[in-house]
Length: 198
Image (spheres, rainbow, N blue to C red):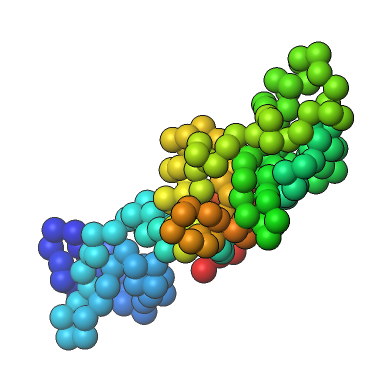
């Protein structure tokens, strides 16, 4: 069908030595999957898409908003100790530091906390703003960005998650509205693989 299409159902059945009725359900599945298409009075033809191409198309259509989770945030006056407690209780590896109104000020990861914990300081007295990654170095995503593009950012920047933000002004301030993690992306692939997401 790739090289000789379009080809009629009768011709396919004849070549496979089966009846057209026996072939009809298989052709219907291939058409629904997008691997072949049919034109009335012309026949079936190969669309040029394979399963991998269709998976890439599907992932490109899925937006961050479809898979994001609730952000875990702490205010800028939180101590390093309280951030550790928050990470433990919320079972997350990254916490977003916000100013009043949910404005993103920084990000704190397990690695940041490990560095400060290995020092000799009192974690109750160290403010989170001393150890957080500042806004100038934070990679963000938006709810409208494709999951594929956001996943590339996670890989390229070697981070565990991205804050999902809503830009507020021209001065590059962002409100935190969600988080996109490696777990969110893995869950998406599992759902696609199990056919649970359409």
